[in-house]
Image (cartoon, rainbow, N blue to C red; front, side, top):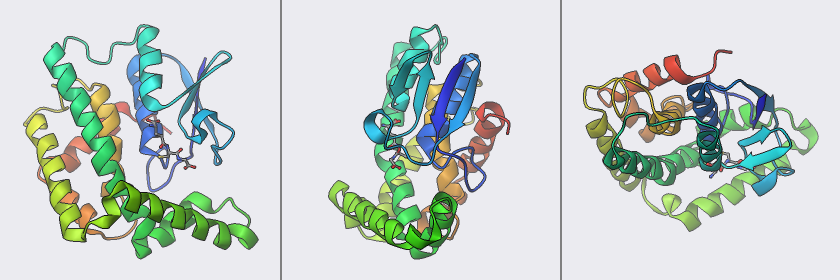
Length: 233
Ligand SMILES: N[C@@H](CCC(=O)N[C@@H](CS)C(=O)NCC(=O)O)C(=O)O
C-alpha cells in the first residue's frame, strides 16, 4: 500500500501543510489505497520537506512529483480535458503555489495574533523548555524568507491587491461550475482548494482571511472540494 508521509492536521484540515493536503486529495482522486504516516520533523526526508510518498522502498518527495508518480501508475487527474485546459490548470496551480500560498505563510507566521495559535498548533509537541527559543528562530527564518521572496516587502494593502487579482482569476475560471474544470474535481482542485481553505481558516482575523471569506463563490467551492476530496478522519 502507498504511504503518505505528512504533517499532522490543525485548524480543521487533515494536515498543516496545503501541499500535504494536496497529496492526500490526489491520492483520493487516484483511487489507489493509501495510508498516512504522520511526522512532525521533515529533516530526515529527501528535500527536508513534506509531503513524501512511500511506494514500496521508494520515497517520492514534492507534491508535483507525487502527482507524476501516480500518473505513471495510471491515475488520470484531468480525464477528458483538452490540452488547453490542462495548460490553464497548470498555470492556476503555479499562481496559487507562488502567490496565495505565500500570503498564507505570511499571515500564519508573521501576523502576531495568528502566530500565537500557529505556534501552539504546530509546535506543541516540542518540549516546553526549548519551544520558545526554537520557534523564535523558526519565525525569524520565515520572516527573512518572506522578505527575500517579496511577500513581506509589500504593504498589507498591496498584498491584498495582488491576492484579489489571483482570487479573481480563480473565480473567473470557476464561473458557475462545481469545480475549476467542470462538474468533476481534478488535480487543480486538489492543489488550489487546500491553500484557499487554510486562508479561510486562519486562526485570527487578517485582511486575507476577510477578503476570501467575502468572495462570492470561493468559500462554497472550498466546501465542495473538502466534501469530495478530503480523506475522512
Ligand atoms: N514544492 C513542495 C513544497 C513542500 C513544502 O514546502 N512543504 C513545507 C510545508 S508547507 C515543508 O515541509 N517545509 C519544511 C518545514 O516545515 O520544516 C511540494 O509541492 O510538495
